[in-house]
Length: 83
Image (cartoon, rainbow, N blue to C red; front, side, top):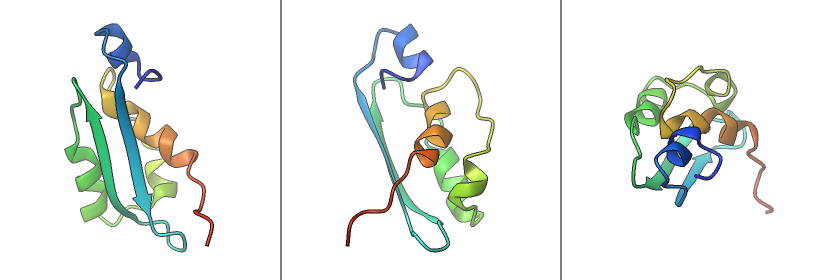
């Protein structure tokens, strides 16, 4: 969470964010966000239920400042796992 301005502002840089997606249609399959001030976890569930792909979610403009504002950045950094 050291890349999240909200976490740094609150002095809580420890945390973890992971997103799992299907590689072909790039649909989000799940996510884990752990940290003391994690808010707006439901944003990922909303996007999953709407069938939004990672490509669309990457361009989302999240509420600032929240810990979840890093999710679009994390999606843009996703790389496929080795087979």
